[in-house]
Image (tube, rainbow, N blue to C red):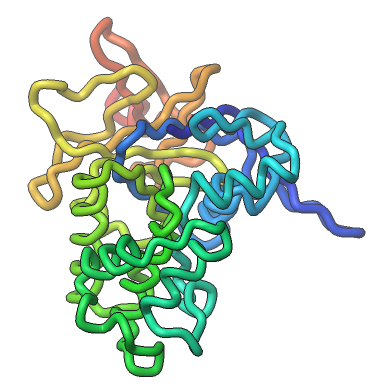
Amino acid sequence: MIYCEGLVKIYKTDDLEVVALQGLNLTVEKGELMAIIGNSGSGKSTLLNTLGGLDRPSAGQVKVGPWDLLKMTEEERVSYKRDTVGFIWQNNARNLLPYLTALENVEMPMMLSGKLDRAYAMQLLEWVGLKHRIHNKLHQLSGGEQQRVAIAISLSNRPELLLADEPTGSVDTATSDMIMNIFRKLNKEIGVTIVIVTHDMTLASQVDRVVAIRDGLTSTEFVKHNPEIGSHGEGFVSLSAHTSQNEHVAYVVVDKVGRLQVPREYLKSMDIKDKVLMEFDGEKITIRAPHKVQTEE
């Protein structure tokens, strides 16, 4: 569904150039439910905007289904945003029109594309648990209810890809769990591919896969533990066994030329600064701090 290789995004002003993505690689399968995590400034929101057709990539490859986002015309970009992708923003002001009812908000994108389907709009609101709220306006809905209306709106154009930017960032834990339950249900029942951008690592236990972005690059990946698969896979180096806390295995992503980004906290805990000792015994690779080797000798 999504294929990124060497994806670069550079923002330029008259006197400033910011490299937000600097060669990012990412693959997302059709029908997958996954999350992208990272600190502020890591590039995760830039990636979301690029996948959504809001930002044009600067270089590299980025494809969503049959669409080549680097080469598409502006007219094709409009069609892509209208027909292929759905958005959910953290800020409800970007999702909802306050003077419309919940039902009218869901119907608005349909009207703009000339495909009004009231029955489907009502079904969407029922799916997100708001059948009894269809005629309420925004001021009559809680923050969590507004976010659920936003989910219904994002599906009104029957997208193949749903992009959610911090969808649980402004709600309490109970509402967050409810929203994630809705995502899982929609993913399972209608097969929509869902990519959630967040800084909340606790979402790892609620999605199939988590990809961490650091400094504009894919760094670490967490996938649900499957004993039949084991700890090895093409393009990954296992960092640890699965944890009982969320039953995920952590991986470092290896790019085409063999580079890998070991998480900073791992290096810090081993007091590794600028270089490491790497050993290969035919079955596994071991990374150690050079000074610890000298001490052992």
